[in-house]
Amino acid sequence: GKLLFRRELDSRRFPTQPKGSSDQLLLLEAEPGKVPVVHRLDALTGMPVAAVALQELEKLSVRPEALGSSRNWMQLAAADAERLYLPVDGPQTNGAPCIGAFDDAGKLVWNWTGSRGRRFVMAGLRGERLCVVESGARGSDKAGGKIAVLRASDGAVLRELDLGDQVQLPLNWHRSWLPEPAPPLLLLTDRTADRAQTRRLIAMALDDELPSFQQALAPEDGEGINTPVLGPGFLAFAVKPAQGRGPVRLYAVQLADRRGAFADGRKQQVLPCSPPYEMTAAGPYTVISAADGLILLGQPRKPR
Image (cartoon, rainbow, N blue to C red; front, side):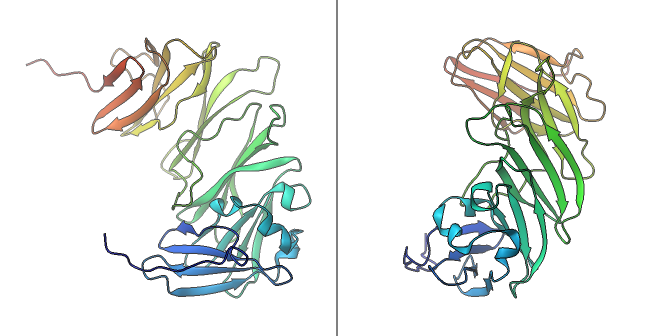
């Protein structure tokens, strides 16, 4: 409980709170009429590591004064030992979300630009990869989206996928001022853009040893429940009913071939329970929490 350091911040100079990224804090200084600076601070001591002056920000079609107009966009900023990664949303640019990678001297090393009319859902690092998720503007269910996995060193697109309509926020990755690295397997749901409008789970791998795949869901399924369980060789995730109340459908698939991972080979089963629903892993068990109790699932016991 010892206080490691304390620093008072003038809100006129520092419009957002610091963002945790790995072992550093990223602090934006954005005074009107001056070049914005992102201070990289040691997370334990508060001592400066680098001050990245964003003099090349306009190469991204971003007006420097726009950075201070939104207080939450720095939640998506990230840094590694060599670069600072700044995602800037569509309303702050020419209409398309973009990411700029800057070195400690403030030079723009590379940039990635999304699609006009879309906004960032999430962005963040996982090792040498940077993942971005964009979708249609707030309030629009029909503007599609995209997931892109980029190489952090040069911005090369390693894999990408166009999303359909009604893109849900990721089930296992959320905005935060704390460090929030991208997960090994990014999971979200959407609906296909064709006439069928099929609800599906999208799994996009950031780690090479994991597969990327899509899993069609039942017609009566709605959005997924946060905190799916990625276990040894399997994935378990739960889906709310589209009508809001009613039983949860739990899916369990083998990662190697997407066959059912339940003991009898099934891929899904319906669990009678009432909202609100939550899901988590507890040791070797998968736990579903609902208003009327807990459901605990695990490996079947071997007969003695």
